[in-house]
Image (spheres, rainbow, N blue to C red):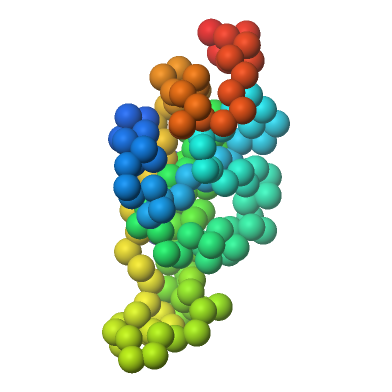
Length: 163
């Protein structure tokens, strides 16, 4: 398995993520927030919270859950360590499943009279995997008060702890 250096993980600018979330492609993307106690103070609308401490035992579930997504974006507070590690772990699990012939969609029955490639057990859908550039700290600076993009935002937490 390839161990991609954390610094080389593909980054998605906050503006691009906001554009996607406000556009017609929102159902094709998953955002995974791996912050722990620092999850308090707001989160990206529609994101899935999986604390990094739970990631190892939940990664197979996450891979299955987001198998149909075109893009999966991971982030933590700054996206310097936990977010990139989570993205790398997700990529490794997808690669492992591909090599072992375990499809992320293995819980779904094959489609009758469908495209043969879509029913192969080892078929893994192409997926863009990113780390949100500058993490939630960068996100909240621009979109924290935008209720279309950020839920449960507490501005005082961010001004007191991340000035």
